[in-house]
Amino acid sequence: MREQLEKIKNDAVKEIKVGTDSKGLDEIRIKYLGKKGLLTGILRGMGGLSTEERPVIGKLANDVREEIEAALEASVNKIKSGEKNKRLLEEVIDITMPGVSSKIGGLHPETKVLDEIKEIFFGMGFSVAEGPEVELDYYNFEALNIPENHPAKDEQDTFYINDKVVLRTQTSPVQIRTMEKTKPPIRIIVPGRVYRSDAVDATHSPVFTQIEGLVVDKGITMANLKGTLDTFAQRFFGEKTRTKFRPHHFPFTEPSAEVDVSCFVCGGEGCRVCKGSGWIEILGAGMVHPDVLRRGGIDPEIYSGFAFGMGLERIVMIKYGIDDMRLLFENDVRFLKQF
Image (cartoon, rainbow, N blue to C red; front, side, top):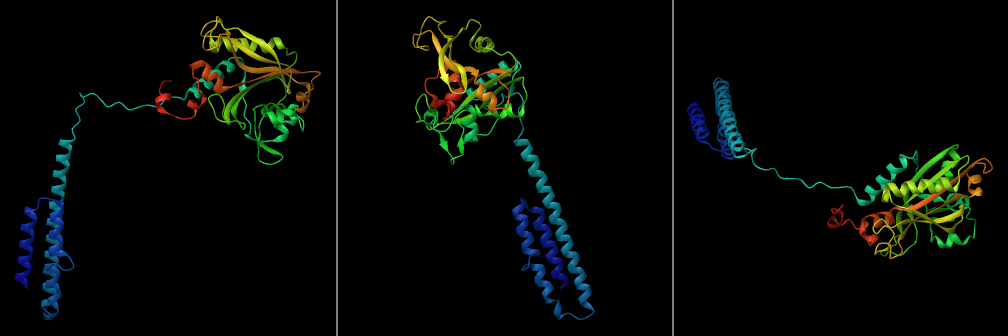
């Protein structure tokens, strides 16, 4: 049995020395040290040894196992080191070679325009206010001087959650919420998504973005409104841009107006962008109705204010000459990378 153990040790060490890869060494380990290996087979025959021989052979078998394991470990480390060095040589980076540029995304045109509009109004002392998109009927209609059964409720094509809760049709409810919580002077803009039951086409969508503006203070007049919108138009569309107010009707402002800007493409001479008129409609505006001020907890005998609202998608389409609103929602990279 001593001779068998010595032979197993010598044979194993020889095979390990000529092993060239981790897989081959693992096969050698199984051959000699596995459950059905040669060394295990010898140990199973120790039952026939005398009491004196058994501990001697057991110690020798353990020594053989330890030598084989040590030889395996040394060979494995040597092979791994060689594989690592080979991989390092193969993976050498030539720093003189040109790099592979990564494609970097950009801001969506709506985000770019919204950021630009925010900066313009920040420069005039405005701050940003927000409100819930799922809104109470009271804030969306009643507090804005649109009582029950008012035709505007039908005109808005509202999405109702229930009789008292709607998806807001405009960002104007934030006016009331702000007035309830803040004492004048108030200067805010309210960018946010709004919802109306419109069919999807080149100029309509059931989901779009509005930018509301509200100023409330003592002595606010239409002149302040026009000055504010003139400043916005000139900074956004160009210094030579002019504004034109046309009479209109909104339940929550009185007087009310639709606001046009002189065409920034043709300078007012008439072109395809302005459809030959020289003017482009951009927003609705007016003086805050006294009843709306009262609903917001503000005394209209002391304070007055103006409000305006514009559709962000419309402004984006005008600025970039886009003729189909759907392009802004489809996220086609071929379209977006132009901006």
